[in-house]
Length: 497
Image (tube, rainbow, N blue to C red; front, side, top):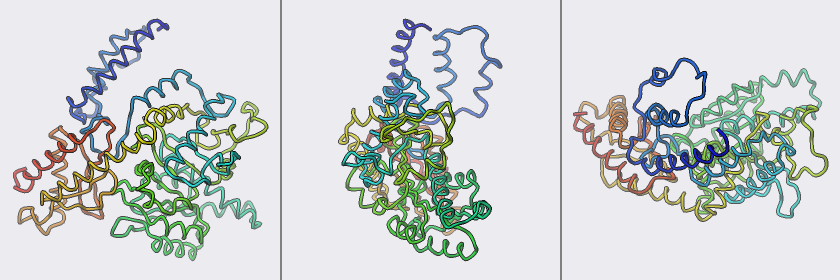
């Protein structure tokens, strides 16, 4: 493909993408294929000779499209949103044009410096404290800074590595020998609630420390009291607590942990505090949500995903640290072929030392496009619109009278179930049967194909958890969701499902 054909095919693909988005309401949001469907349709080997663009385009429509779940559909309410936007797509196109491997400043100075700039922009936009900024208000270099990771899971691992580095540095300063420190590594303990994302457990598996899961309270939150009890027990057992994850908007219920109380505990116990705000962190662009996050200014690291609810195509996970020295020391490996820039490091950061891989894409471009083309006001309107729709859905469910709202609706997530008292007599009073009824409701809704959502379990209780947040959704889609839920709830209650 030469430049002339690329120009022609590129324009065709833009039209193809635009047509796709304009027709999303005409297809079911979730794929109905069976496992192995694509293998049966594909050749057993790669082609020996070039194939035409037309053939590839046809295969996208006939083979790939049937196996796609349409996350960008306004009728997709599963998990949490994975926002896309046309400005972000344009930014990704420019990134693909350059196709750099930006592991340090000299690889492409603009890539490094733009990331430093937009991460400070974004940090200020969500109200982060100045200690998380790479460049302070007076123009001097700060101790902290932000970096774009691929996912919140990667951010979790990186933050935990930095936390481990800090505690081992302090042990060395106390005169501990290398042998003592090696023995202590296996005694390190990280703390999570039973509502923390699975990324926390995965991070402990990777770095080889212990994980302590703490029971959440009735509001599905991690509390200071429960954390302190666990830490004190482990210290008495000879273990070494070092890391705590508090969540701002849990996956199951969008609950907010007792961040302020936990911050006090981690300071008194000298533990690293990581805030996982992967989903709900985007809401902090709206000042009215910031009181809910009191205490994050005292954290050691903070992470949220613009690729979830802030109009930025996957992957783009924003991680900030208050002191980058621990992270850089833990992940720095010098080689002759990786030259460092001499002089000021304010804008010449080696972001390879802030992440797990060496290479990195120019992801700051799409975030830059989004922040400029929407502006802060446009991003706030995007968030507020979804919260309004979620509040509307909550009101409709309550007014209907057949549903129980399981957790407060704060962001775009609505968690509910059928009231057990309305189920057939042989079901009422039996938790397993009530759970089966709500699980059946999820099955019927998704089998219908008009909307897609997922269910969950809250301390053994089945519930539905539609997440409103599609950048291509509208109030009409939320109204359709309510309509479909109502129709199949009638079937479940009548016992004729």
